[in-house]
Image 1: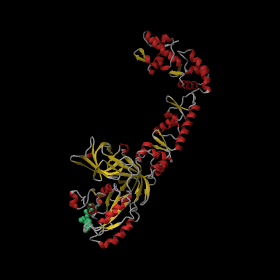
Image 2: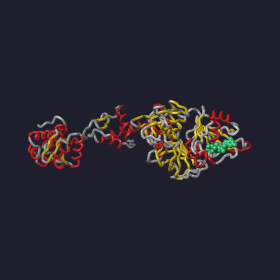
Image 3: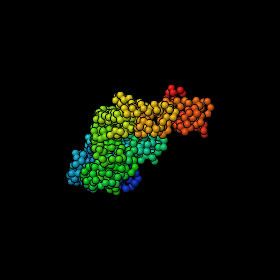
Image 4: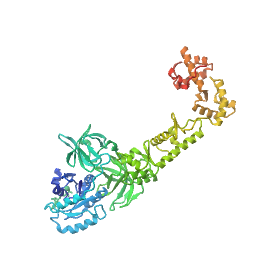
Length: 627
Ligand SMILES: Nc1nc2c(ncn2[C@@H]2O[C@H](COP(=O)(O)OP(=O)(O)OP(=O)(O)O)[C@@H](O)[C@H]2O)c(=O)[nH]1
Ligand SMILES: [Mg+2]
């Protein structure tokens, strides 16, 4: 159990921790000299771990780093002074962080017993609307020892239920130092999962590799630490040193290493804050991290005190953050805490942040339960989500249970709601059927063309998954790169069929110098555009080949000419002249054919000479030797 102190400067937090543990947590010379706490202090007993925070208003950011890792609050209020500004602000921070277990110590009882009633009344009023409204209030004195035992008992009872150790490990680093003999040590609160000696983890956001050489859990050597404990890790890794670790970093499992510079958050503004305008600059605190951020209000243009809104926080630099992490915001000058909230989406899309669909998605994500979040998310457009992104955001290790409970369909990289899946499947089948009706001569559609043809165009990655499923269950079929309906066979439309029946004999008659489209059109008395379109479709079916613009040859003729070229080359030299002589079709056409062969990679030209690449002779079909 980790207890964090809270309260105004000089109210006796550090003295009280010493009375409870025997440890003086003010270690720094400057702390001794000035008589105030500056940095976080740590003290342990057999049953408790204490984080002692500074009360001075200049060090609220440090208090925030400490308070983000605690279970239970020890709010300290001095009887002579009563409630003061940082009593309020620390209490607000505890409430924004969701710390709902705690005890209030009324300190310096030895000098101000007469103030107990007044201060108690003041505090009861202050706590009334908070999660700590029923916290015990105990007068204590570190000088006489009065109330210290009672306080210990009360802390024991205030402890919250043990943490769920599910999820990948994430340790919020609040300190790094080198220990002679051991090397680099980082300390912090393990907010999820477990860490064991020899684990291989990452430092985030830097991404440096980390090996756990040894660890302490709650200040004791251990083989393993679990969520909720304060942990010290002795770590090693290439390029790792004290200088590359800062307060606010994470040591975590590679699967949850995903630095982000944008967070979509449900933000609550404190009742005594000033109204928040678009694009306000704020200090953002998340776990032990502290960065500047800009607030874009998503569902309104101005946020009133005491109200809550959906906001996009754009950070000055990337940090590690996941769904349900708490954020606390302070004003531009860091003079006051103004509000806080819960991360709904740590990896939000760049575009469309204020669109109604997007706001509906964020509302869907506004629940602590990942199964409910997923179910609700898939119920709003577009009805699917990126599987890896969702699992990472929610730090789900074994996702099976959640996916089953949310009854979604995993296809490729996406998770679909059953309705969306059925709908998209319908769109695919409709699009393919329409394509076959429109262009019976086509084998089908290539996947990307099909995707772009869908009214609800799903992203490429997820579409691939959808197609995989449809192929597997036989709803559609595939020939090479073409997707088609299972029953589809390529054929010509009746009009094409008719035209081809008259055109083919003309092309076959003069097979080495067939008529061009213009001549065919004139002979057959049809528009040139019509004959050209039909021949293009026949080309896609593999019946003809457009050797030069508007000059179509039968495919088998091209295959025959390829073999003739090889023959000519084998007999002597393959040039425009020798090839023309062999085919008896004129120099211009012979050159066009050879240039076509060059482009197709059948022949290679050096000056006037050409060589034939024998391995490419099959390029235009099999079994078509010279007649
Ligand atoms: N008489 C009396 N004095 C106390 C008691 N507890 C603390 N003090 C004195 O109050 C002063 C401040 O105590 P600290 O424990 O440093 O206060 P703090 O809350 O830790 O201060 P910051 O960390 O700077 O916010 C010191 O001079 C203490 O000796 C107490 O129970 N009785
Ligand atoms: Mg102190």
